[in-house]
Image (cartoon, rainbow, N blue to C red; front, side, top):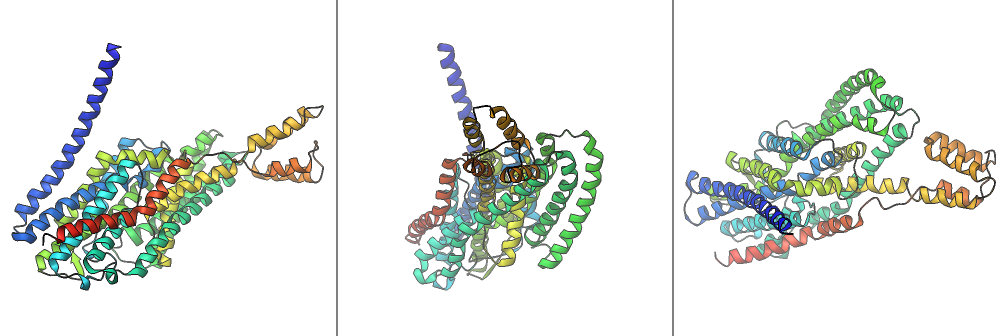
Length: 521
């Protein structure tokens, strides 16, 4: 008993040391921001103090984005065991920073998509207070969501925070309600589109490969097409979203370049799989292994695009504050200084490394079990949904798309497996006489058959041409697919609840913080 107590004490001490190490690194990062912004920028007075405070909060916000949002890019790859947690963090951190620094852009709207009409804000001091309150509120909400293990949209967090602080500063008329209506619509649009596309890809893979008797030959034909579609999708996605601030192209140009890349990868994969086909076993595990490398590339490319786009959630308000302090007034467009961009880039990477594993585990394994084929379907949904939504002008959240994709593959698995084994047992139970062995043999063949053979066997049953006789009720049962809880309902409830309250919660926090700050001005 004493040895057990000593062991428990050692484990507790080890956990405490890890937590102190994380807090220590995070505090050092924020302290470094404070030192640079206070001494390196040479701005004094009240606005100089506000800029230092905003820079520190911007770093805190960036760390929370890394801890929460980046999990959506690498979670499926980790959950499917395509890559270890350590390597996932390294790859995501490198590509998030690369995306933020290379393609993070040099200009950003200071009003976050015209959510608030800044003419209603009294003066530049109140504008700085508004943006600082929005940053802090968004960061606090993300921190809470991460602690609870709920992946939420960082875009919605900062949008809600700007809305709340803007309403507190300028009143109800200051808000652009049509824009907020579109954002609210994205709560439904993003996960539904992501779920349907992910489920569609998984169903394609199952029908074209894993439901076939010769899975290796089916994979040799189908996997190159899937990889070609992936190359097309991700190239187009990066051109439109990840590199749009470096090289601005229209949809047709991006799609044309994407199509060329898709054809190249289709040809390469077709040659590669023709050579490898003889080395593969006719098992689902062997087919899954073909998707490991594409999943790693998908995680890296999604991280790059995320860094290029979502770094604005951390540094957009900070860039607006810095621009206001430098110019002495509020402008419609704010330039992003390099030091602000670096705060966002390093903050996201540090937050991912220190606190990202918790959400990566949630996304990768606590909603539904993922293998490589399912994770590939989720990654495809993430890219294709953004392309479709951007062309339709629909506001979507990358977080909601990824989680919706995981829900989609999980619910599809439930649909495809719904009460299948129980149905078979019921039919076998009703045939306990002389035809028992014949019925059991038929049902075993039916369970192991591919889709085409199943359809033939069902037609024979209906036409009474099979070697067994089943009642009409049993025939209807065998046509049904099986229901079993493969998506963890507690995770679904927690995540959806967090999505719904993200905007109002961050808005309320921001309004309270703004009132406190405004009372000191």
